[in-house]
Image (cartoon, rainbow, N blue to C red):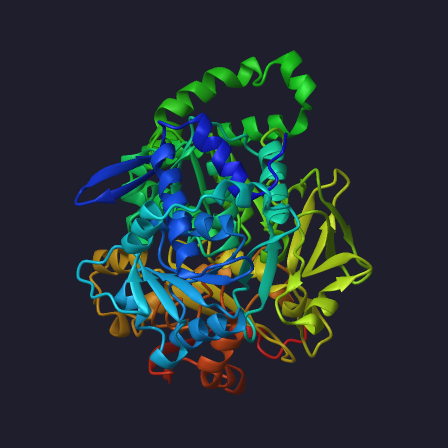
Amino acid sequence: MKANNLVEAVARTAQKHAGKDAFLWKLEGGWHGISYETFWNKVKHLAAGLAYLGVKRNDKVAILSENNPYWPAADLAIMSLGAVSVPIHSTLPPDQVTYILKNAECTFMFVQDDFFLDKIPEADRVPTAIIFPPDNFVQTEQIVSLQHVASLGYNLPYENWEYNWSNLKRDELATIIHTSGTTGNPKGAMLTHGNILSNVEGVQFWVLEAKPSDILLSHLPLSHVFERMAGQFMPLSIGCTIAYAEGIDKVQENLLEVRPTVLVSVPLLFEKVYATAQQMVESGTPLRKKIFKWAINIGLKKYEYYLSQSFDEMMKNGFLPKEITRSWKIANALVYSKVKKKLGGRIRGLISGGGALNPEIGRFFWAVDIPALEGYGLTETSPVVCTNPMVRSKVGTVGKPLPNLEIKIAEDGEVMVKGPSVMKGYYKDDEATAETFRDGWFLTGDIGSIDEEGYLKIVDRKKRIIVLTTGKNVAPQPVENAMTQSLYINNAVLIGQDKKYVIALITPSLENLLPWAKQKGLTTDVNQLLKEPAVQQLLTKEVAKFTSKFARHEQPKKVVIIGKEWNVQDGELTPSLKVRLPEIQKKYGEVIELAYAEEMFTDMRIAANEAAVGLSINPERRGSRE
């Protein structure tokens, strides 16, 4: 029987897998665990303490913290009272934190420590803030510790607690998650218990069936809907163990320590793994390069066979033809196993979401025997709409719709969705809600197409399609993805609305560029390094190389090299690591205009106090009306 609400789904697991580790986290150099039974008791005591403090049904309670076991405890304690949790990205600047607190009308909040609490001006703080275990803490009437709240609940138990949460229905509001806000202020998507539960059920059926024996390494922010569903509620409803990474910069180290069986992540991490593998090959001997290339070709033959056969045919004829089997085993020993070890050695599947995965990178992972399952979704759909199933994953697409969802393509190419995981609407914004629905269908804002086998391919955001003055249209996302396939390019943005041609803004991957520069005997001072003709030539050649397969009007005619990596704190990226185009256009507007205004654009320019180099590529094409 299906659970009626998210709390019930976890309660069932806590009873069934009481002694099993629910969470792992690293403290003082060692990994520590907490069992499902102990975790559930903490949720119970915390909920009772919140009730004593006055949290009641439909109250809005914020959570501002990085990932740790207190996060899901707070989340479930809030929901168990019929209250609504409001996650806030820990990397957001103070003005956006304040905006969300006010927009959602929060009266209580959980906060990690003083550092995060100080993000909120005292005048804008909620009446009661509950701080996770701090090193030094002085309690006041407005600021209390989580231990104090849990202690209140332990000494003053909430007698009707189980009755209260067991009677929560699927259509009741569970959480308000604010969109990343790539344009304008974020909107609060209202998601019910049924919205998220139906997504968990659809993903579990369709993708990579999670098992209680699975271990997941959680490193995406729990404030993001993708990690909240796939990295919290899905594993907790199954009985998996969730290990919290120490931070994005420690993921590689933690992968080797935890050795997860399933990795849920965004394309950025997979791009880094791919780049590391390519760098290892490039620095190797000619023989190593030859072996690697041969092994990848064998892996691709296996993947192509897999795509060409139905499941019944594979069961009848064998998963792999005999003529490939021997070569594949050798390739596995020489290459695949070494790549797998970089991910801990036990990965049985990668789940990629939160952005488009470059098809070349997707094929690479399949070639080295690591299934990479790309999906697609939005905050408003809880989030997964489509995903590639394990049985037949088609690289270059985002898969088929979950079995409990419907999709269709509007006349203008926009993807429309209908089903139980679609949000109730935007909190306190009826106008935006009305604009987002048409005849019961949710309008995603994405342009896509469905192939003859029912797989969806996303072209780009509807509002991001670039219209040139020549009349030609450019979908920037595929071109940007191609550029970031380079070892030396971290982020890439295509610009060109109402211009004759497109240009690219790129940020170099300093992680790979600095060792290259050192090897070439060049300076390792970043600002000086970008003035080096050899570096400029390298980066422009990389852009030209990786965009050569596109139509000539889609290829950037000029490149602006930004002298810093973009990040969330400075506003260039959203918390889900998508580029915030309006911020980029505002910050680098002067350099962008100069790039279009000058015939030759090769001197150093300053934009927003950051070094930016503008360079032309394919100069013989300048003035072309392609």
